[in-house]
Length: 367
Image 1 (cartoon, rainbow, N blue to C red):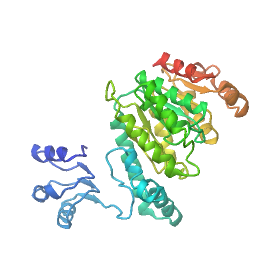
Image 2 (cartoon, rainbow, N blue to C red; image 1 turned 30 degrees about the vertical axis):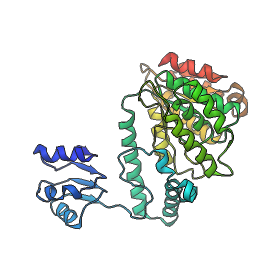
Image 3 (tube, rainbow, N blue to C red; image 1 turned 120 degrees about the vertical axis):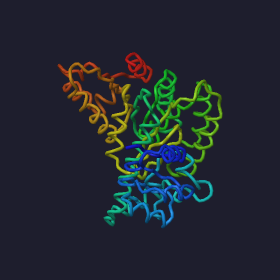
Image 4 (cartoon, rainbow, N blue to C red; image 1 turned 90 degrees about the vertical axis):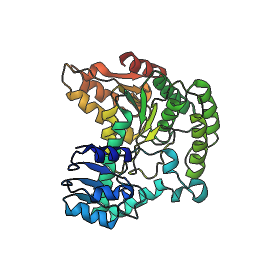
C-alpha cells in the first residue's frame, strides 16, 4: 500500500497506468488533479486523508469505493500531516499575539477540551495525528543512529548543569549520532541545543545569550522568543554537512512544558505513552539519563524492561545514568537497576557515571 505524500508522487501514480486502488493519499490539495481523478474508477480501497477536494470529487471517490477521511475545521493542527513540525510553525504568532494563541498552546487546549467532553471524533483525529507523526519521524531519521538524552524540565539556562547537558549533546552529534530528547525545556533543551550547534564557539555564544532568560517561568513568550532568534542564527552558521543532528519528541500531555526549538524536526504527540515508547525504541545507539524526577524515572524503567528481557545473543545499547549521588541516594533507582541486571545482559550495558564527559565516552565506545 503506497503512501502518496507529495503532488509529485501523485503525478507519478496517475501517469503510471497502475490502479489507484489501495493507495493512501495524505494531506494533498487535489484541486489541480480533479479532472484526472474524476476520469478514474479504479478507486476501491483508495484512502484520502484530509487535504483539499471539491464536493464533486469527494462524491465520485466514495461512489467508487474510496474512503475519504474528513478533518475538523476547528483543529489547530493538521491531523493528517506528512512531515515533522518546525519551531516557527508551533510558535506561529508568538510575537504578535503571545504564546496562548500559538498553534502549540491551542492544540493543548483543543486536546484537553475533547478529553473533558469525551469527543470521540477528536480522539480519532488525535490518534491519526500521532500515527502520522510517527511515520514522518521514521522517514526523517532514515537509518541514522540515534542516542536518547533524558532529563528534567526544571534545569535553568544559566546553570552549570545546563551547560554540561549542552556539551553532551554537542559531543554526541559531532561524533555522528542524532540526539533525540523529550523535546521540552531544561536538560532536554540543553542537549538539543548542543547537538544543533555546529561548533563549540557557536555553542558558547548561544549559552551566553540564553542565560539572560533562564526559565520558561514566568514568561513562555520571553523564553521562546529569545530561543527562536538564537535558533535562526545557529542555522545560518556554515556546517560541514546537512545531516540531521537534533530531534525533539515532546507531548501535549504535559501542557505546562513548552517545546524547545533547537531541533531539526519536532515530533509532537498527543499521547504521552506513544511518544515515550517511540522515543525509547528509536534510541538505537544508547540512552543517557541526566538528573530528573518522576517523569525521568518512568523513562528509565521503560528502557530497562526491554533490556532485561532481551535475548542473550542480542547486542544491547548502553543505558548511562549521570550523577552517582543523585541516582544512588537522592533518587535511588540505581540499586534496583543493579539488582535486575545481575546475571543478565542488562548488567553489562548499564552504567553509573558522574560526568557528561564520561557518559559520552561510554556511548561512543559502543557506537
